[in-house]
Length: 97
Image 1 (cartoon, one colour):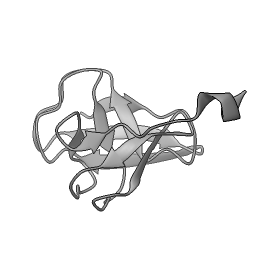
Image 2 (cartoon, helix red, strand yellow; image 1 turned 45 degrees about the horizontal axis):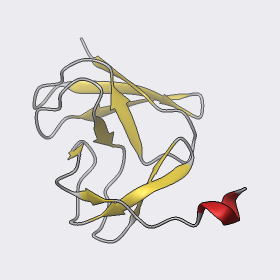
Image 3 (cartoon, one colour; image 1 turned 180 degrees about the vertical axis):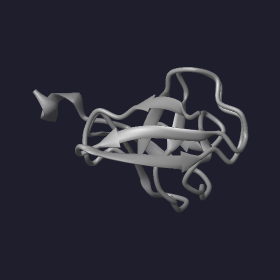
Image 4 (cartoon, helix red, strand yellow; image 1 turned 120 degrees about the vertical axis):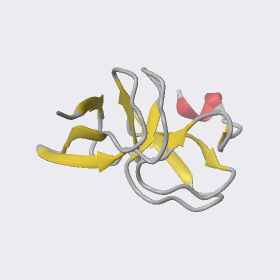
């Protein structure tokens, strides 16, 4: 049996797991209409992010189709993406109106 995760936009590089995930669990996401299984590389608490692809240090993290931060270290598909490996980026909200 697999665990489930939500991905909202095809360009997203992370998904949100909807239940606790243990290392080696298979996590199922539907991305752009295609079912994808990702093997969890570590325990991930419910409602946290799982990497959908390998990411390098400095690479932007995309969720909701938007940049939500940048990687502070590299991660593999299946890693937990949290405050330990992502940093916020400054935004110019006036330009976004």
